[in-house]
Length: 172
Image (cartoon, rainbow, N blue to C red; front, top):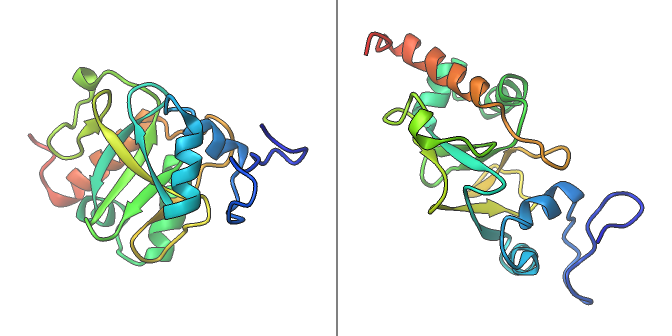
């Protein structure tokens, strides 16, 4: 349920006041029990969401992203990803990975399985709370803006192409 500002209401009274937007409520509905997702965000700052129904994830190594963007400067990387991918991106600093959230897409049709695996049905993704925006641990490099906001698959593929070309390995 949402208030008049479009923010999802806390799952339970007395929960810590962690902001939850309608976009995050939409993400939580990837779980059979969305309140479990909200509880994870409230209590731990992260929740585990299944992939393949509402969204998939393209796993991008930090090296690939930094090569494609042309820098490892966090502010420039974030700004470039926001503009180029036009959708939500999670950064897992510990694992040196970015996860671009994309619409469910057939894994068999993804053309870059070795450079940037597409994770779908049968996989789960650790998703940070809406207020975790870095710069350490698991956080949003680019937060979802509205309900259903996802990166276009073609935009993520273009980033992979740019990085591969910059690495001189496009001839594969």
